[in-house]
Image 1: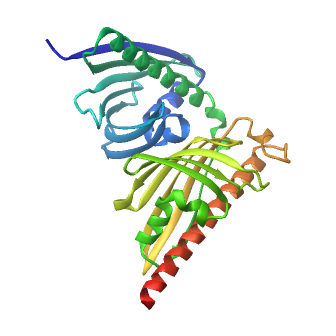
Image 2 (image 1 turned 60 degrees about the vertical axis):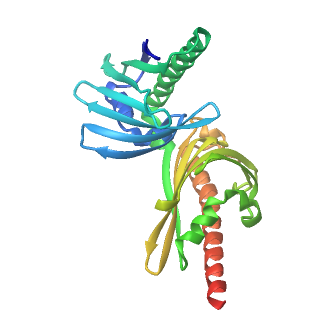
Image 3 (image 1 turned 180 degrees about the vertical axis):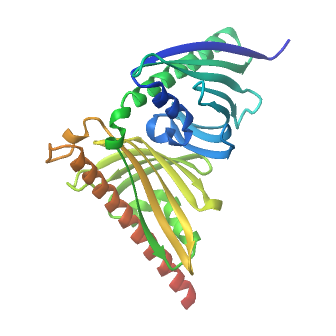
Length: 322
C-alpha cells in the first residue's frame, strides 16, 4: 500500500477587478512579497516567457518556509499551471491551476484547483493536515482578492526608493555589520532594541524597535531577513509594520565600485488605504504620507549606511597600521 495520499480541492472567489488585472497579479510572482501577506521573497531562476522556475520563501504561522515553484503562464486563457515542491521534503509536490474568468469589464471569477500529495498519517492527523491546507487555500484567495480590488489606487499607495553610499573598504566588513542586526542597538543610535531568532542559518526573524520617525515616535516592527553572503545581499520583509505602512520589503546589496564597494538599501512600500489620516500632524492626502514615509525610512537607511561605512573604513585603517 502506498505511504502517500493525494488530496484534491477546488475553490472559487469573486473579485471586483478586471480579469486582466487579476491575471497580471498572479503572473507577476516577483511582486508578491509587497502585495500579498505571506510571501517574503521570490527569486526567478529560469524564465522563457511561458515556463518559469521560482524559489519562494513565505511565512506559515511562526515558520519561514522555502520551496521551488514551476509554472506555465497562459495569458490567452488567463491560466497559470504550477507545481510546488518543498525544498525540505522534495518528494511531496503540490500541483494545481489558477484560472481567471472575466465577468464583465470590472469583475472576475477566480478558481484555484489543487492536488496535494502527503504522507499517509493517522486519521486525526490527516484531517488536521487537510483542514490546514484548505485554510491556506482560502487565505490565498482572500489575499488575492484584497490586493486586486485596490488596483485603481496602487500607483498612489506604492513607492520605491533607495539610498546608497560608497565605502573604501572590503565588502566583507560592511556585510558583517549589516548581517549582525543583534548588535545594532549598540552601533546605531535610532535602533533601541533588537531580538533575533535564527533557527535556520541565514534566515533571521527580527523584532526591532526604532526611534527614527520624523515625529520622534518609537516604531515596533518584526521582519524576516534572508541573508545571502556569497551574493553580498540581505533581503527583508516586515511582517509587522507601523502606521501608515501596509507592507514593506527591501534589500541591502553590495556592488563592487572602484577600489571599494557601493552599499545600496532599496525599499518598496505600500501605504495603507487610510494612510493620509495616519500621518501625525497632517490630514491632507497621500502626497504628505508618501513624503513622511520617504523621510522616515530614508533617514534610517542613511544613518545605517553611514555607520557601516565608518566601521568598515576604520577597521581597514587600523589593520593597515598594524
